[in-house]
Structures are given as structure tokens and as C-alpha cells.
Image (cartoon, rainbow, N blue to C red):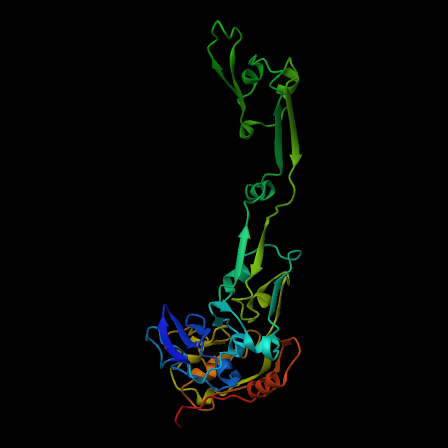
Length: 364
């Protein structure tokens, strides 16, 4: 019978399915990426998405989804796919990525953007190290001669060239200098002349140039070149699918090479007097590492109060949904950065997302 519906959790993915006579739609949530922020809950036009166990409630439970989706209520429109700031939700129709809401009605995209300016980037490791989502990949080729020389306090490199057509392996250079060595092979009736191979060890050369003047065949050329400044070659890339626009890379970059455009902008307030003693749930669930508790520096010292760094906050709301106490956090998104023309539906969703949020105990 059609339509038919199914829901399962497999390979750490929540999958809800709708089968019609001619098509099959699947909405899949990557549980490794989903933070339970609640953006999709507010954005869903059919109110088909609800909260699952988050923070301390879901701790230690394998393959527990932080959101739940009613496969019968869901219209499989793709709004949640578009609105998820973590790229955790994917909609497919007959196995192919598809967003019916865009094709049928039109709907703007979130204007997520993060770039590394290759002209300013020095290929250091800072942005890659601090990225909380491993969205930055640094690929650096072998260091050039200049960098190797700088690490050994070498200022020059020797450029040795031997004209093998002129060289007779007479052995004068090898007698004069330990930098030269000739490996002779015994001559035979077929090779009346001595044969072998001349090798040059740059480390033993002091660039006296005696070999050049002594060579009767003028077969040796030796130049000392000043090394260029150290230079790395490679690139640093940001994977926008993994990027959450937290701005860690932008804040830490000493060259101001990283530029990030946040998806959400807003205001955030902590009411730490209401925080339960010993609780750090919000710190644990924050995907951007924007919340933290200062470390205890001395034995016996009381833990510091919860603190917040606005530079890194992406206003996702995961902390609010996970908090076990009422009124500890106040968050209000003031702007959603869209790409494309807004629609009546996107404006309605924006109104819900920009309403003030604060933790509320479910059932209270």
C-alpha cells in the first residue's frame, strides 16, 4: 500500500523514508554531525521534527539521535537540508540529492562563506589546529632549499657541473681535494682507457676553486649561489560542507588570511548565577568551542564561572537545548544571512529563528 513509511538508525545515521507509487524519498541525519541545535525544528514547515536526548540526557547512549523526525508528518521538502548549519541533514529522491522546495516554490540558501587568501597565507598550522570541525586541510610540499638551508644556518648552495665529454678521469682533482672521488674500473682490451665515475661531495667543498684551475680539460664548473629566503609551497583549503562559520581560523590567523561570513548573527547572554553547580553540559555540546570554564590554577581553588567568547559563537542554539536549567542562557538571532531571494516561507522561518531563546525544562 502507498504511501508507506519507515524509520531506522543504522551506521550512526537516522533515516526516514516515504515510498509513493513512483518515487522514494529519504531524509537522512548524520548523527556524528548533528548537534541538536534545533534550527531544523524551528524551520520545519510541517512541525515534523522534535527534540531528542541532548547533553547529559543522551550521554553514553550509542546511536541516539538528538532530533526525531515523524516520517508521516514530513513533506520531504528539503527545508531542513537547506537550513542545517552543520550539513547534517540530506534529502534524496530516488537516491539522488534533491530539494523540492527550491524546484517548486523557490527558497534562498544560507550564505555560508569561508576563504583563505593564498597571497596572505604563510602555510602555518594554526587554523588547521584550532578548527573544531576539522574543516581545514593543509597540504604542504617538501620544503625548498632555502628553508632547509635556513634550518642549518647555511647561506649558500654550490652548483657543481661536470662536462663528462671533456673529463678524462685523470684524477688531479681527487688528489687535490677530498670533495672529489673517482671509482675506477679496471681497463680491458675493449676499453683501453681507464673508465669509472667521478663523484663530488658538496659538504667537503670549501669553494677554494683550486679544482677549477687545476683541471687540464676545463671540465669542472663550480658556482656558489646565495640562497633565497625560505619558502613553502602548498595550499590551505576550507571545506565549506564541514565549516560551521565559527571564525576560529579568522581570529587566530596572524596574517589575516582567513575570512569568514557567519550564517547567523545575534546577541547572547549568560546568567551564570542560575547555572547548576558542577554542570558543564553546554561546554560539552558547543560545536564551536565558544563556551568554556576557566581552569583551576591552584589546588583547592573553586572552579571558575562559565564564560563565553562571542567571536566564536555561531548562534546555533545547541547549548540552550542541552541546558538542564531554566533561564541560564538568553540568545537572540538578529540576522540570518541569505543567498538568493527571500520568500514568504523563508521570512516566516526567519521570524521563528530570530525569536529569543532560553532553556526550558521539557514538561515543566
